[in-house]
Length: 316
Image (cartoon, one colour):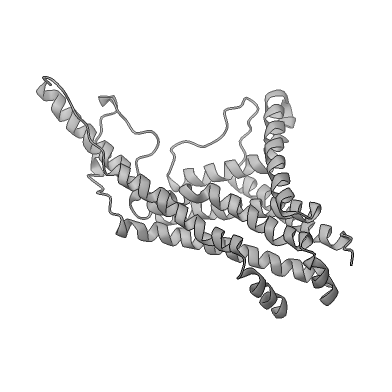
């Protein structure tokens, strides 16, 4: 096993696609954070003409509340969530590409034959490759969490008066949507955990398609088509089925991932209401049950990796 890990290290460390993903995703997260932080600090309200004195007091309270509201995402520890939200899409795409590239190119370049000839244990080769993919994804996620913790000290956004949000009159006109409370470090890490699960699902789907079709690009395309097709089928079923059949579309991978993220955000205090779809066919499941369904999906997809590779015909 150590020799396989060392051999994969020599292969992976020289690949530019791996370097671009590992370094590019944190760079994109920094740019997104900087754009939002600079915009949050440029808030101002102007009035024209004669304004009644009582309106000045109301406007001052509203202005202070808005400043505090727009500054909240850039205060630690909520800044961790802000960085993750700006990079979640790229993390999922990058994770899928890593899996498809590191598995599919073995067939395209013909190097899989050398691996099998030297070590007939295909499961060991695939397990080591999975370890490397998981390590790279977790490394990128750890970098994102670290950036979220460090950036508030580098890019300072004036928090204003947080009490202005609590003292804001709901009938005053402008009221911020959702919760106005601060997020704890545990809540931020809970959101980070859902990013890990989302990235793992992307790796599982893209890697399975790459192994099955023996191509990196076809693996990415196959995973994308599956996600879109599953979403369409689930939407059709939720609008038509009734009774106990309503639970069937709730078992889909994309539905459960979306709900898992929404449940984590609600538990962390980022939203005051759940993120359940508004479809008439929606059935709410307890979060532990939803997490268990996702775990079964991931275990099944990764198990299929080994089944597909063991049964694959590799011509010499």
